[in-house]
Length: 277
Image (tube, rainbow, N blue to C red; front, top):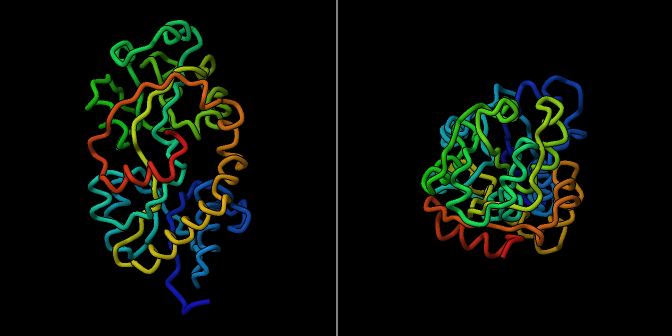
């Protein structure tokens, strides 16, 4: 082991099972956290992950908190130019490029209407729900889509209540999310054949005051990718496995739009690590 590094401090929502004391940190499992643990282990760096319980900050607030690194020094979220300039991105996309591959939840009675979509112009006739502050909203608006904003915790119910037509979710998350969302929003289903793709990697971002942690995390992620452990994890983890098992990537009719807010470095990372060609 090398000399001791500072702890990797990550924010945890006070409402999470861990912060409520229902599960130990060792037993707490989320895909991105399990990947971070794997990366730290493979980096051989002398550091550990320390969760910090707080009212989970918005993405904008997380950026400002990370710039100082006083409370937390490592987060994960979607990339854009501003975030890449202000913070240190570990340039291995956490979900191997499947974040920008958007499948749609919709009301069951809308399936036939979406079945016939073959062009972007046709897809633009459907309104889409998005969360407040998500970088996706800007990408979709820039590409001429009609976006209705809401809070993440209510969007599936807004879909059920016909506030918008489609709820786009990342390929890796949609099957797992649907399994609990449809209980609260009866009548919503996943369309298995139509997808929208834009380049949008999700990275671990590290405070610029902790470059040694950034180096350790990025090194570990690269090792996890090259030795196959990262692909094994995304195929087997309870949050991501449902989509990989239930929705064939090769069967999707994919419509593509550009993302003008993404650096050349990120486009390169998607070419290197992405599962989509």
